[in-house]
Image 1: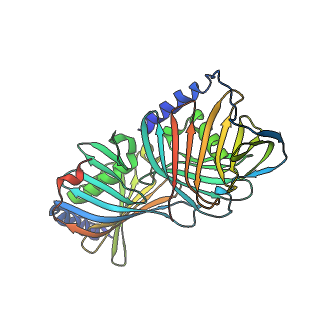
Image 2: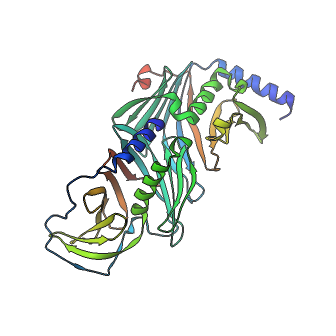
Image 3: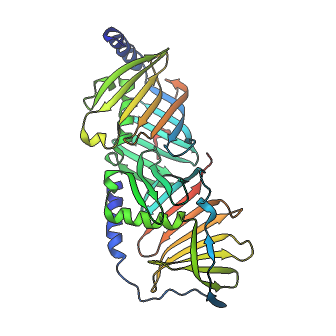
Length: 209
Length: 185
């Protein structure tokens, strides 16, 4: 199944280059202004803390499930592992803004396109803080826009202050949506990473250690 | 173990396994990753029916099952069902072959591994090192631990990175009633 998954991912990666005509716009913006605020993603930011999640991956109608384990190793990098249900390691990566190292990858997954996709997805998920440039005020959320290869929009719930969503978007369209369910704003109980250009969805559900 | 101890051990395992028609057992799976301070734990129940039906029914952290039957692997992930070619998970396929092999008594004769035998106190263990380059990419070593009755009570699967998975079996029932329905997906 992994081989099929790879094939799907590679084909999907190619599809990423097909641009949509729709432009990405936030809905119901009340106001927007420049900001120098640092936005914080607290969900994987504690140093030396073990985080473990059950992972369910849906790619082009195929399912793959396993475990996702991650730890913030120092101020610049996280180490993460994705395994099958039986514990076989699929990929083991060290990942940060300035670094990316594949410590182990199962041969079937060792494709440039797949590694790039995983690097980008998890770099955004794990990155503890980013410098915002624009503050968009919505009715119930404050959205902070971070400039990058693809801009990232951090949605903070006005009432609770919790990070509820990150959207990565090109100037033309939404690319990846990260949705967080949290009860305390510090721990993500469930995370969904949904790709908009390819049929790939990753659901992470917190598991106790 | 010396040569005569190995011969006696292999014969004892073979004698024990010959009588086994069904086996059920609770299991706990511990995934050890070098940078994590604690292993991640999963648990459930395993059922085996000679010659080649094997079911892993996980209860924690979520309900899902994997069943090996008719050379296929059937997966039920919280109600989402699929069946998969056995070749897709080669490492675990090898583990299952070995566990099934431990019942048939054929596992020590596998051409795919170099096997060595050890005794630590009352615990006897067999280490399997894959011979082929292809298998070595996925698996560094598999260790089977045997109890005093010459039955496997723990499996340790060591990966090329030295991260490993331990499967510990408890509450084994030999030749109890095992309904065929546990092997249905």
